[in-house]
Length: 314
Image (tube, rainbow, N blue to C red):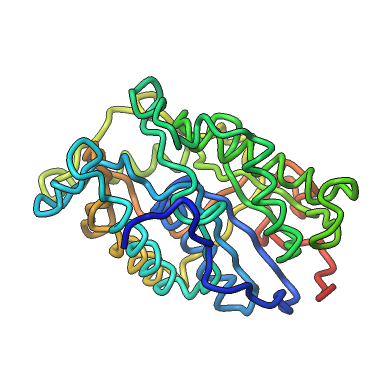
């Protein structure tokens, strides 16, 4: 298949979910969701929550780790999206998530590439999208799904990628539009999301992962950085409010990551992207709450994204 800017994000409108707990995640590219939130998604799906993933681009500019598929790269045949759409579907099957969509339909917004590259200027680059227009597509999903919880990135998109930054802007604006009775009053009643989280990777957790990779030594083929300061991401520990224990769902997360052979290399206990820098598998996934109250004590982090909510079908 070839990505089509006018294609709908699903074949036909789905009925509004009736699950009492409803979680919406907004990610930039296929694979982002499973790396940072895969165990969380699998866990809530297994517990009967309605989990919806909205992916903003098809990852057209990604570097390809499978030599046999190198011809699909953006600077050659430019058909990587065809593969990554399938990889995403396979990953969602692995996680047990059956509601996944592309923002505005697959192919509407294109992967913008890394900051400062020529890909930023391509006609459909998500980085250049009108925020209100893109947010309107997402606000319609919010009103349809009526999620109590939204997960997206922080203002820097976690590590400064333009599509991650734009996903943050679009998600936060969509939450405003969906709750505004003056916005698109026809399709769907206004809906206010009770709790909004940004994904986080505590620096202490990164430091532990770096130490583990160094201890693995020659048994790992991945590169180890010297310290957390050498990484382009990492959240100050004091900002992290919430930790979801995904230990029981790690095999689903691993299977989801294995669904992305063009993007992710895997070893026992570690994985790497195209930069070959090893990262430890995370059984616990972390978040920073930015709307709503974290149900936590001074000594412990919040353990449930839905904590403190009276979840209901309405």
